[in-house]
Every structure is written in C-alpha cells, then in structure tokens.
Amino acid sequence: MDCEEYKDLFDLYISQTISDNDKTMFEAHIKNCLNCRNALLRLYAFDQFVKSEQQLAIDPYLASRIMACIENLEKKQNIATQWKYGKLLKPVILTLGIFTAIIIGNYIGKIYQLNQNSTMVSTNDDIYITDDFDMEAIYYLIND
Image (tube, rainbow, N blue to C red; front, side, top):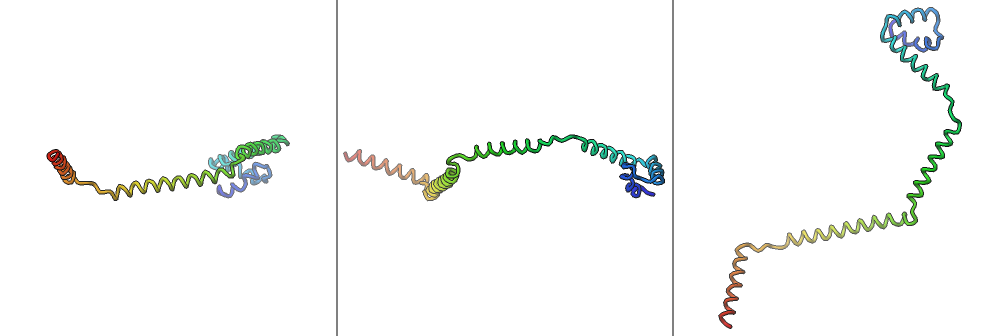
C-alpha cells in the first residue's frame, strides 16, 4: 500500500475500529514513513482537543447574558442617536451646507470673472497718464 491508501485508515486507527490485519500493516508503515507519522500525530492531537472541548460544561445562562448585554448596548446607542430634533436637524444642516457651498462658489466665480475681464494699464499708459496729469497741474498753476 502507498501513503494515500493508508490515509484512509487514520480515522479507523484513532477510533480503534481498525481490523487486526490492517492495524499491523498500518503500524509498520507508520514506523517507516515520517510524513504519515506526523499526519497521524496531528490528527490524534486534534481528536484529543475535540474530545476535551466536548467535556467542558457550558453555562446554560451564558447565551441569555450575552443577549442582554447586546440589547443594553443597542438601547444606549439608540438613546444617543435619537435626539428630539435629530430627524429634522440633519436635513436642515445638509441643505444649509449645500446652499453655503453654492453661494461661496458663486462669489469666487464672480471674483475670478472680474479679474479676467479687468484690463491692466500698461506701463506706457501709466507714464502717459502721469505726464498728462503733470501737464494739467502746470496748466492750472500758470493760469491762476
């Protein structure tokens, strides 16, 4: 037999329901095959763990205590979230936020548009305007 065929006998060996002939062949294979021996040890440890867990006594009121704690937590959360004006206040705050965003966006857009439409006076025009102003000032000084 190869290892795959012996793997079918693991459960029978652990539960001690294996025939004497198969038991002798299985034990001989386990002595020679390290992989099967390690697999058998893991299965045996798992079987012992399951048996020990089955023997634990479970408190019959554990589930009801857990459910009561969950219900208390849910009540506390509901009380905290259910404010007298909570259902009305959330849509109002949302509407005011959207309205404020639209107003601010509109205002920023107008400022940007004014900056785009305004023309800058070139340096030559500044000098010309300044020179013209100086000439008017001189004109008024002479004629007074």
